[in-house]
Each structure stands twice: as structure tokens, then as C-alpha cells.
View 1 (cartoon, helix red, strand yellow):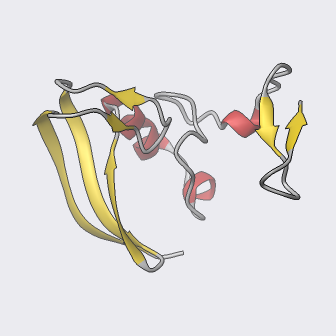
View 2: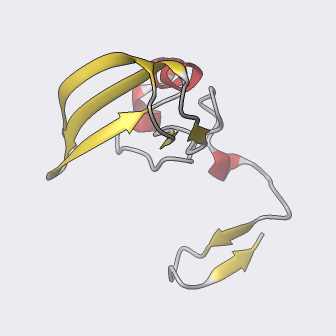
Length: 105
């Protein structure tokens, strides 16, 4: 997969709520020091906001962990711990075979 960076900057203060591109938790309006980046992934542009600690986790992540990309929410906030590696017994997760099926794990 090819990622072509377009811009990277730190937002002084957010004007509205955003979703973190790493942990998928909400970034509240009025948050300060929020890393923002835009890039081309595969065939389309992407704009992404992250918690500062999540941006740090992205910087610490090994190439093998993020080489093929990730989906927001694949990692815990501020860590490189993949949620799919966690033994979370009481969680519903989408089935791999069909998106409209759910498996009780």
C-alpha cells in the first residue's frame, strides 16, 4: 500500500468534535494541540485527527504493525496494543465471513 503525505500540522484548538484516526475515540471541540494530517491512501484523500498520545503511538509503531494500514479503533488510545489481540470475552465483534453477522466472543 502506498501512502502519499500531503500535509501535517498541529491544530491549536479544534472547532468541532472529531474521531481519532488511531483509537476512534472522540476528540472534543475545544481540544488543543491536536495532530492533523492529510494524505492519499490507495486512491483517495484522507484527513485525520489524532489525540497527541495516539500520534505518539503511531510514531512508535513498528512498520510491520502498520504496513498494510489500519482502521480507526484497531488500537487502544495512546498505545500500539491492537484490540484484536485482546481477550475481551463480553464483546460483540463483526464476523470475518459476513459483515452483517455478529459473533459473540
